[in-house]
Length: 175
Image 1 (cartoon, rainbow, N blue to C red):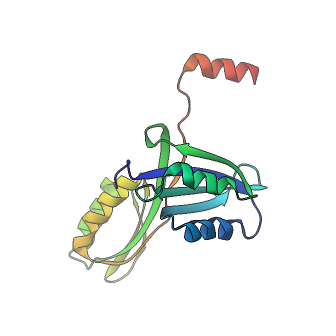
Image 2 (cartoon, rainbow, N blue to C red):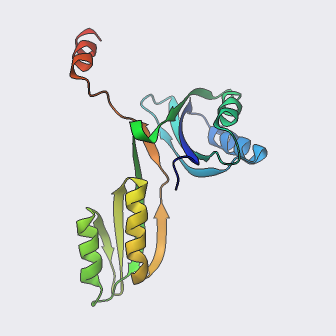
């Protein structure tokens, strides 16, 4: 996935029924492509944060943002630059792993700091959390074993924290 083709939008919305449907409907009506979508309650229980990874090859980002701001439930929209954001995704996969392959799959999971969450006679279900690129690589490594089922959550992201000690100390003392 090229960073030039996709942008991450963090959209703070009112936590009310139908908001996600209105956002998705806006994208469908306008023909905007969503690469990834994740939604959950935010720090304030009255708000939800929708993380949308959008394809900007076909539609300018400014147009997407303008259309989102027309929705009454949208409170704030932030574009997150991948260089200044922490991005994560969750990956679950059930992989063919008989007794001969089980050790190899287990070793891959351990090396990439994943978890084995279920074991059957001929398959293993594995979980991995991390940057989407890491999950893409993990998926590629599992494919030769045979992926039976696969589910990814979609990307979530927040801005990186300020590392300037002087600024953090001043903010901490005054605010």
